[in-house]
Image 1 (cartoon, rainbow, N blue to C red):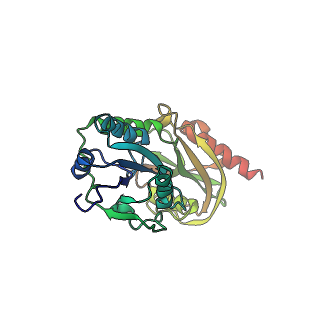
Image 2: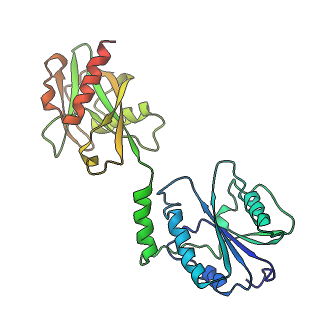
Image 3: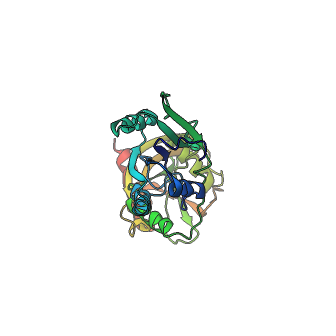
Length: 295
């Protein structure tokens, strides 16, 4: 703080994504001998590890400080975008307030980011971690409120999944699978991983995992998609599962077996399949498969 220009306003720039404000920062705010402007950077994403406190919680925290500290003149939210030069926007804002030069302290984690594109005369920009290091201890009410608001106000999520209809066309057989805790049958499949190169890759990975590699795919084709009426999301109507359905051709293997969370698999004749043996949400997959055979 001693190196800062005490006769000029102090500008502090960060996303302030920490449960407890850094002690060095609170010391500055409590002992500043000049006007302080807080620029709160906020991401367009919600409920991420790097953006878990909603903007209104952060602003509310500083509003409480303002009530006790007349030095804090303004709290200005700054929304980050792909090609955003936040220093340009901040300095334009400061000039609007009649400020022609000052110290600007910017959270050090943005030093290598894409947002700083310009340098400006009479404005001293200092990147530092000293005032912004995280202290995410969970014994503060801001954390609980922030966590609740982050979950409550996040964007609705569509969870991508893949389901696989394995067919031996020469014998007119379908492969079904049964989970350990279930009595009814289903098609193999599961969630798309962030490491999957494509939905097709996800489908082939799920097939390999849930059949313990006992099925050798010959071809794969997407035949449709649908919103899954999954029981796990009936109490969470904000989110839903969307599944892409694939047909994989493979040769009949009498030794096919289950893997991962699949207890067993079995081959059934396509024309003899009783849809009532399927879990409810996978009956739609069967409909999609039969419709694909008509086109």
